[in-house]
Image 1 (tube, rainbow, N blue to C red):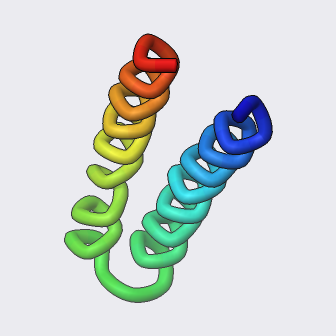
Image 2: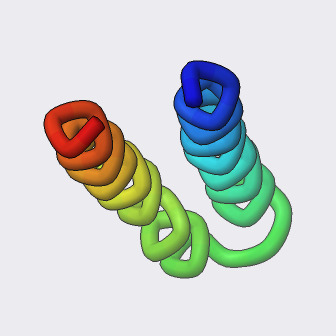
Image 3: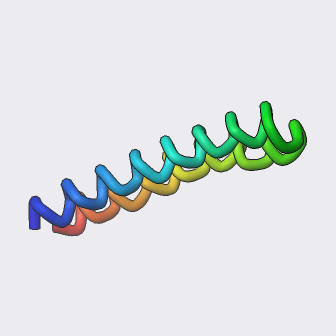
Length: 60
């Protein structure tokens, strides 16, 4: 069970990181508004990940 927790944690952090990198790319090379829109995803991904991981931890 601890492996699933670790994999979930890593995948959440990686998805937030890639979202951040995509927003930087969009900001500088495509359109600033699209970069801002994708940049808003980062806190949402991290908040959702925190919710899922703490809920799963209390249920185990």
